[in-house]
Every structure is written in structure tokens, then in C-alpha cells.
Image (cartoon, rainbow, N blue to C red; front, side):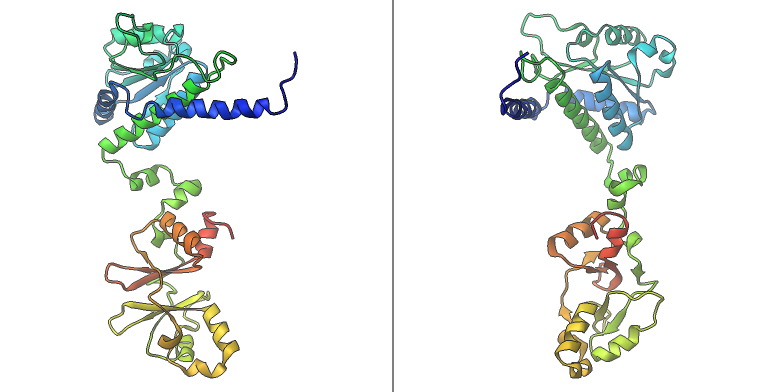
Length: 341
């Protein structure tokens, strides 16, 4: 076989990505039947049922991801291998369950056979196949068994006819499965807080933690606060030895206890190097007034965005009245591996 030209493989890669993107983009108006599919997924979950996803080969791998996404969004779901189902796994299916069957051709014998049995048992079936039948043309065997058939609108894979490996079909199926899962979860009122309870681990779980949970200095523990009317040296004494750790900043407040400014260790070093006599000045004269803050009900990801955008190492946390309740240090985010040290 003659090797391809040096750049041809790169051109093929670029073309592949364009064709896969086009396959996904073509579904942005949502396939016919999408809303009905979401409704019966929602009804299944509300009735205590499970969305059982099935597919063979690459469709099975895509189905596993769709199933995992649904489960993480509060929609009970499991993957069922269509061949294993004929050898005992049919016992997994209950009358309250829903079947999501995947097959680009709509002719995968094992999937069609499984759905034929489940159709006889009265289970609702949502299918995702490739080509919508033309007027007067018979639908594929799997779609004919469906309660709601969904079509990707694809006739062939990307780079056809040179390559026939599953590419555009699997990408589009995955995207459509994500759309079903997200839409059904939103219909059920699912929130990020619900997602965080189901996904506490890793960087994703850490990003969804409340900011007050990750701040080491809070109103109840180690928070350095001083009146803005005192001198720099008095403010230092006021917070000295308040805790076993040394926070990287002092928060300054007015007579009502509302945050008015922040004075960092860096500010102190610069002040001393410039003129030690300024240590006797009111700290309100040399603090950073009206610093960027974050709300006490914010999530860690909000703090990450603020730190990365403004390169701010210490972020005051304030309540609804503007009073300081915590101090988030960039090292709190580093410890969770949400930002790099």
C-alpha cells in the first residue's frame, strides 16, 4: 500500500472534525420526537423506574457514557448488554422502566431482538438511529419497535466512502444522549447542588463545593478582622496570635462591621521597605479599599474564576449585608487541585 502524502493525514483529521461538528450541529433544532422522549424519561424517573440503555459495539460504549450521565443527573440508569439480556439480564427490566436503544443502522440483530421482547412486555422504548426514512419509505426495524424513534439525520459516517469506522454517528449519538439527559434533569428541577452530592470526588466535585466549606479562615475560626480606624501596627497586634496559622491578609471593617478594605502581607512588606514610620498611620489610609469579594453562598468554581481572572491571592468572603465571614486564600484552591500552585 502506498503511504499517504505527508500532510494528507492532517487534512483528513481536519475534515473529520468538521464533518462530526456538522453532524452534531444539524441536530441543534432538536429531532422530531425529542420533547416526547424527554417527557417519558422524566415520567420513568418520577415513577421510580430506571432508564436501561442498550447498544452493541461502539454504540454500547456510547450508551455506557449516556447512562452514566443520566445517573449523575439524578435519573436512575444502567447499561444492559443486548446479548447478555438473552441469557438472564432480562430480569433487570421492570414494568416501570424505560429502554433507550442505540443502533446507527437500526438493524443490529441483538438490539432489535431485545426490543422486540420488551415491546411485547409493554415497556416504552426510545431509539436513536441514523437515517430518517423518506416519505413512503419503511423505517428501520429498530425504529418500528420504538415508542419514540429519534433520528440523527445521518446517511453515512464522516470521511465516507474512504472510511466506514463509527465516527460521526457515535459523536452525534453521544451528543443527543447528553441532550436528553440534561433536558430531562432540568425538567425535574435538578441543580448543581444535587449534582455535587452525586459527584463529591475529583476536581469536578471540588469545584461544586460551597466556598465556605473550603476556606480555612472563617468568622468562627482564625478570621483576621480589624477596624479600619486603627493604625497599621495596631491592626497587626490585634490579629497577632489569633490562631496557630498566619493568614495572608487582614480584613478591615467600618463601625457597622461591613467590609471596607483588605491589607495583605505584601502591602505590609512594601510599606516597611518604603518608610517604617508609616506603620503608625491609620490602616484605612493604606489598605486596598473596596476589594473584590465573593458571596458566602458561592461555589468554589466561582472563586477559581475570580482568582484566575484577577490574579487575586486572597479573596474576602462576605454575607448578604457585606460583612466579612471568611477569607479564601489561593492555597485553599491549590489544596483541592482546582488551581496550580
